[in-house]
Length: 492
Image (cartoon, rainbow, N blue to C red; front, side):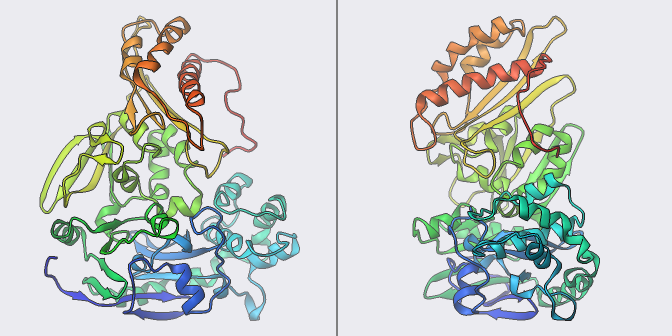
């Protein structure tokens, strides 16, 4: 690996204590560290895959706008990702004079807990929400709790508790608010601009000093595992028991979190999380914002990265199909060299991507649809929130003044071994009137584009039918139908 100034220890703050760790394996999870090495057992293990939220903690990191705290899943968060962060567990919560914290008291008074196993996770998720939105709407509460599951109470008592927290105290007086400058100063004092390299019996952990350092390190160790958000890699460890050493943790690289906007495109760094991108993408390309709100739960969106979703090349990854439909381009980097290619060219075959050894996804550039161009993306799952896609369709259509289809780009996930364009369907639509008759005549072309598989999420027949129906839905939405195509119990 490239020679650079380095240190052989991780530094972070756990609740109120400065922590220095030298004996760290790349697959050591935060959950195991808290429970087994620190006896902080309020953080529970429920699923070990980032689904149930029982292990939720807050992790704060200094970003451009200051110290930012986010709810994350400790079960799939590795210790290697925590350098220069503040980890907050449920044991750190307290009210004035040693009383219960406002979040906890609201949960008690409004009967938000029964068996109590999931309760610490709910408390931490609501704590994170309360710090950002002291007076949230019911829809914002439900969104914050998408990643928390409870088998006992139903969710209404928990939602009522969430809406009542500010009647028990003020978020501005919470320790995470008025101690923020002090914590930020302590984290800044820990930073030395050095790469972290830890060699342990369990393997090698590397935290690059910056993006250029990462490029140099990975170019010399192309078989290393890159860990950004760990929402996939975490399951490689907890469910598949796969070794990941040497592991390079890039979640803290400031340059990888950059987003830039021009009149025609948005460029997203590989380390930008779904939560980071939600506001900007939702404002510029509303359908993408709506999609992101259905990817995992809040904890997963706070950890998972758009670049990682692309890099892994999963056929059911949610972001590639709409980005392909929009005509996105990908920048790959190896050392100091970069190359740009259409995103659709990155996906070669199942498990195979157009990425050379030592090359990594640095950024993706997403065109903003011009005015008058129709764009939409639809995700089909067994349950609406926090579920893996069965099939997903993305549609970009331009209709000329005569009412004919001038151009179209259609892409699907879950229909083939990679995210894929529906080129036969596109051909059947282009140049023809944008009418129901044209849509119906194009539906048989799906059989030329896709031969879907049957698995635990959907049968081949279901996927084929759903894919065709998504095109029909897109047509009706673009032609002003008044039919209730989507029902929501609360406004966002």
